Image 1: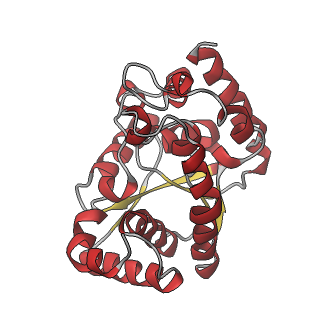
Image 2 (image 1 turned 180 degrees about the horizontal axis):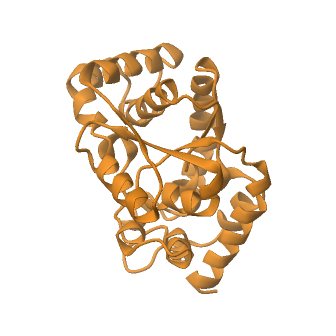
Length: 242
């Protein structure tokens, strides 16, 4: 089955979950394919936020997208001290975290602690379900089963702990309804074409009329797109497990 048919199916499944989305839900918008597709699907219900250091790629891309869509974007700029403080809080919640995990969970903690709304949407789960990581594209892993196991048994419990500590409720459309079961068991070849992952999500973005700079944007992890990683490197790599 080609990517366009799969993408239409994904859009249908996202539409099925729209009644579960509260009006005034915040969305962490990076300008990547996952969060941009969610913004396009649920735009009337969402308040977009972009998080990062001034001039970071995520802020620049999210700003460009919201300008093109005629939407108001709320920008929360980080500083070295606020990032270190967020990282320390994450370590208090999970002292067994590794450095890669600390990077994206620090981004989440900082965002949730800065956003006013109680419900916060993220694109969590899309990389695992739709083969977004470089390890899938370059062949280091030919299946997403291990990544899905880590997501369900390690990442999501930790992120629920973080959100609960901050009095927030995470909204995760890619993990709602029939989406996980429908798409996670497709073959690697269904998700990767010509060395590019998440081809179904990218095609869904195109079908929703999003600009090509969104659906052609290379994958960039949250800690890199926001600029958080370089500020954590010297102070925290030695403190966490590998």
